[in-house]
Image (cartoon, rainbow, N blue to C red; front, top):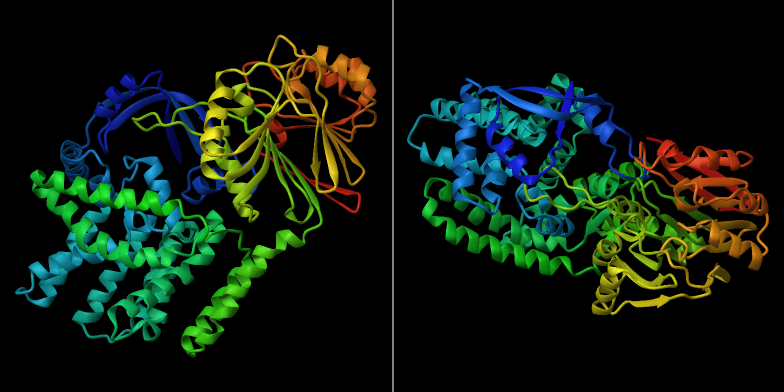
Length: 626
């Protein structure tokens, strides 16, 4: 099976073609068949596995596309009419999200705030929407006999499933409703838990790969938790009952969230107490009403703006956010304890659940290893250094590649999203030092993005004049009251020193690069930035650098760097080249690779991220290949 990605030269061309691309249309496409890659930064989303679990094994990079004819399928025709009406009525994206399950039109920053405060499940089609839709229909058919009433609802839900493309959570919810309806009509007296088990068994039997779908896991485990903890949730006090419901849903979803996204917001327990009734009782029904009565759109926009502004404000409360990773053992132990606690009313043992989280949070502070990640950021540069016991976190360059996704708005994408995901998986919520070798976009293009998304204590710039990109970053740093320094000679790091091999000011940005040297656990590290042969000569004349263990090759392996004289002098044991796959510059240069032949060469285009773990003078190297 294939999945196609459409690349077009300009936004106007994209809009014109998308206007013709209706759901279910027959199209003729031309393009390049490619295999998807694994994630090359550890603990990141694996797109190749994601596609494989959906039985998709190739991508088609589409160069040309031509619509042959529209579909005669009644479901697709209905979906196209619904979509056309939605686009005429609503520009916020919420009608499309709630009715068709497509949240791509919701503002990215707003949606990220929903994710951060733990309420994105409300904006993805799920059991809640099926329950609300079926509830509305059942109430409207209350005078119809039971069998006919439930049959009508089942037909509507099955048709609705086809319209929205049957995401896993909708499959679960509709299948559950059908079995529950049969149970009620024929009085089989099956418990809700048994109905859920039958539902899961049927869906896994039909497609076992559904167990890899995050929406399915969230849907099943959260519903199971609510059924399992029903006695605990019951209370005469509505607010108290609502809190316990939110707490149970939070606890049952917590291991999945941490295992997949490495971030949890404890306050989401409170937030969901308010957001769930607001969305389910007010916003979702009002979206359906606006679809029927478009003149209500202004009121809908007002409700949405209030909700979005509150979410953006709450997202700024960072104190209650935890960043960590749950392994399979911790997940199993967490769920066993949770099941026992709720079944046998041992609520005082809730502390054990939080003890698991606390121990996981403390593990990085007990680790005496030095970690260095040469990150695969494409045709750019970025290296992450984590000192023992998590005392300092240093990022040398950010990478940066301006690209556009397939949304109509042409939003920017950032290579540093992978860096943030890695940091969060390691339980890290700040960068102590962001060191920028120089002002080229492929080295610092994502700096402002990082400043806006993670705490940064200090920023180090190179010597020389500063370009517009560096000046823009300095303005942001001043606004955020983040200290920054220029043209420094050394840093004291965890009883060690990082040296900047600075020199006279050059007339080009590359030779003004910060060249960074340090020794840790008897291993010598050298980072060259984009420094060229002229700066290499200066270093040879002014510093005694011999037997470099890990040599970060200058300028992505360009022939303007890494002269034979310089490489022979430093005598690297390992040479590491940060370079993009199939880049247009021809990096790394073959002559440079020949000069480096006496060292072990690692390249991010072939090896992905290169991870070093150094402890007791022993080096362990792991590769994350595409």
